[in-house]
Image (tube, rainbow, N blue to C red; front, side, top):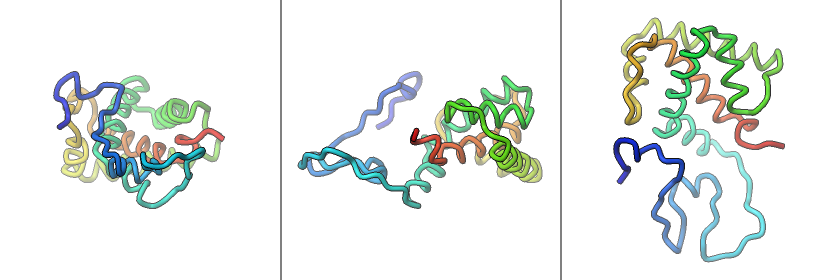
Length: 160
């Protein structure tokens, strides 16, 4: 069972691990079984991994919370939200092409969320932490979608 309150967001991950195999989410990301020795883990990129990142409660809530921070820190500027999100998640500045693509994603999502307030409320209710009522919900949701897309980006996951 997940902890509640401050214990919910510890930096560690506590998972029941059976001898015969890791937890299902860990298998999705190529965790090895404990009954064999391996020198190097297999590295794959599958649609199932993307589905976990894009739809998993942990990832969506983390995206929302980082989105709230960025909206607060940048006063809602699309260019600055994109730049800060990219820098935070990849460790480098986005080039002009990446900035353009991600800026378009953020603007499109912002328009879509402004057109459907019910969808915004449903999206922001994901996870255990309550949304920040002081911030524009559509701005936060659009930033969260941008961040969620970046979390699924190979450059965010692996440094080559």
